[in-house]
Image 1 (tube, helix red, strand yellow):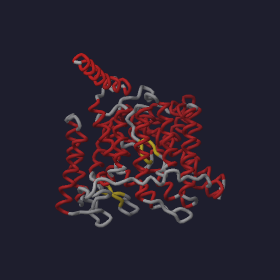
Image 2 (cartoon, helix red, strand yellow):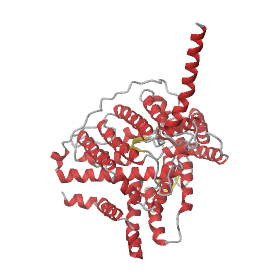
Image 3 (cartoon, rainbow, N blue to C red):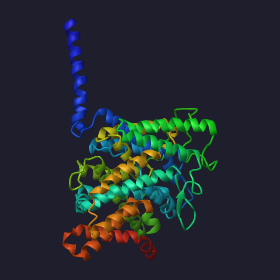
Image 4 (cartoon, rainbow, N blue to C red):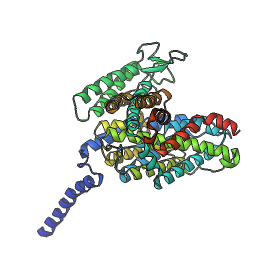
Length: 486
């Protein structure tokens, strides 16, 4: 009996010691210079930086009224947003084994809510998103998407990384109310309110930014996470004293989430929107008009994701000298599946989120961080009240810090050759100024092809880059083209 008990104990110990080894080998944690602790922290920080999407995506989508006068329910949108983000983030982490989390793409959801559903129903709009995803999966599975990725010159890939760094820093500054629209032609944006930092939430952002910056500069493990936790506590204290409330109720309030302890913790998710898809848009608005909408979705989805993955892999130190990262084909296929999943659940196309850089800044290097982030998104379906504790002003500080980290890649750009300088500059500048990664990439591609070819370097340009640049010309001129199509 004693021998049997001892044998069982030995087997249990063997299983317990082998499991971490299997996880390490599967995700290549040690090989990438990471640790389980760093991955757990990174996954948590990524979730905190992205959690606002559970609130913001429903705000955007529920504000769109379709051609039949119907709108989508906010609570249902919140549930499917968290559900799809959780499933896709875990799938990407397990298949591609990279720390790039997924959620509903902000550019595409706005396009759907404010443009597409003016012509079709919500179900038909989501059908177009599904078609867009199928096209992207086919392009990835056939290798064409990889070919386009490889055709992009390294200097442009670096500029995409830098541009995304500036872009996410700008997102953070805007979300925090540190940079605001003036409502005037000149200057279009300004500092805070009337040129000064005048609200409590923005002051909390500044405090969180400085604390996080010091911790990261001193190389404190978990610096970003500690900064977010401290910032949240400060925000809760500020709210308890001054009762700022929501910005919807008072000008100096919190933008999305008020940092207070919720009265209830649990809520049952309503996933009733899943499967609400129709392909009747081709009948309703005609084949050409529907195809133009699909073309816009594909271009936005395709190049937003490509740019984001390029930038994140570079920041994580996973890209080689050509800018290629591990399991690239799998990553591109799964990203396309994210668009299909987003359409099928009515939460809009899911894609790689640039806020994943927050987790990478915390040390995430493998798909294990994604599993952590994905599980937290799935829990968020049941813990919706808790997702509102961290205000977006606090999460915004992490984005600015990570933007600064990504900006450091600018040292690798060859500034002495102006045929490189101009395309790189346009890529970096246009991303934040137009709030679109795809726009920045398009401007970079077109200017690279034109300037380099007319500078006597046409032979160095891949024919595929010419084709893609022509596609971007059509993309930028889609308004007049749609008008011509009626």
